[in-house]
Length: 474
Image (cartoon, rainbow, N blue to C red; front, side, top):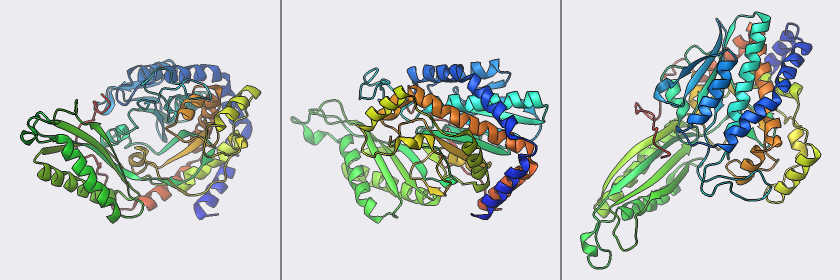
C-alpha cells in the first residue's frame, strides 16, 4: 500500500469517530427515500437527449430541482447558455460536484436488450450523462441536507457542465475562474463496474479543417474545378502516413463531415473533423502542429484554400490517490448493485450481444483499488489541474458493455442504470461529508495535489482564448 493510501485510511478511521457509521446510514437512507424521484428525473433526461451546448431542457430540469432544494443558481456561466452552478452554504471548505447531461449524436436506442432506435438518427445517452447529472445532483442535495441539519460550516457547489462530448465545456468554466475557490471535487461516471481508482487519461486537441475550391462539371469541364474534397482526402492521406512517425500512445481520429453534394459536381467545399490524443498535453500540441502542416500541404497540392478551427482541447487528468482512497472506502460501505430477477433476465439478453463477457456479479462487487491509465479523454482533466479531483465509476451498464454503444443506452434507460447512479450518489455524498468533518483529510488531499502539480504550474487552456464552440453540434 502506498503512503497516500495508508495515510488516508488512517485519517478515515479517525474521522469515523466524528462521522459514525450510523450517521452515514442516515445519509444513505435519505438518498434511498428519494430514489423514485431521482430515477424519474434521469428517465426524463434519457427520453429527451440533447447534444452538447443544446441541452436547454436538461439544464433547466436540473436547475429547477436544485432551486427547489434551496441552492442559489447562477445560469449561463462562462458564456455558455447551458452551463450553470448551484451553491449552498457558506465558508470553507468548498466542495464541488460535477454533473454532465449531454448526449451523443445518432445513438438513439430503446430500453430493450436488442438493437432498436427509439427515433432513427436521433441522439442517445450512450455515455450515461443523464445518470451522471442526476446522480451528482442527488449527492449535492444529500450534502446540503446534512450541512443544514448538522449546522456545520461549509459550501457545496454543483457544477452543471455541458458539452463534455467533444465540446470541452468544463475548460471554458475553468478558464472563467469558476474553480478558483474549490478545495476538493468529487465526481463519477457511468460504467460496467464499481471502482474508485486514481487514474490518468489522454489529453486532446480537436478541430475542423475546411477546404474551399472551385465547383465545375466533373465530366464536361473537370480542368476548371479544384476539388475541396481532394484537399480533405489529401490531408487524410498525409496524416495516415504521419501515424508511423508518432509515439506509441498517440491517437488520431477523423471523420469527413462534409464531402460534397453530388458526384458530378466538383466539390467547392469540404470539411474534416480531427481529434489528436496523447498521455501528455505537450505531445498533443506537437502532433497537432504536424496535422496542421499536413492540411497546409494538401491545400497546396490541390490548389485549394484551407482554414481550420480548434473546437476543443483537454488536459490529461491529474490523479489524487488520497481522495480516491477515501472514495473507495465509502463505495465499499455503500456496496454495489443487486439485480432483480427481471433485471437479471435483461442483463443476460444484453450479454448475448456483447463481445467481452464479464461476470454479472461485477455489478455487485467493488473492484480493488489500483492506479489506472485510461485511454479515453474528458474535460475533467482541466478541472483536476485546478483543484484536487477524484471520480468513481458505478455499474450502470451490464458488465462487459462498452461506452458509446447501444447497449449502454439501453441499460441506462432501465432500473439497472438508476441503481448504479444511486451507488455513485451515496459514495460522493459520504466522501464530501467526510471532508467537512475532518480537516486532516483535506490537508492530505491538498498536499498530494500540490506535489503532483508542481510549484511552477500555470494553467493555459489548450483551446486558447476562443469563445465556446456553441455551434459544434449544429
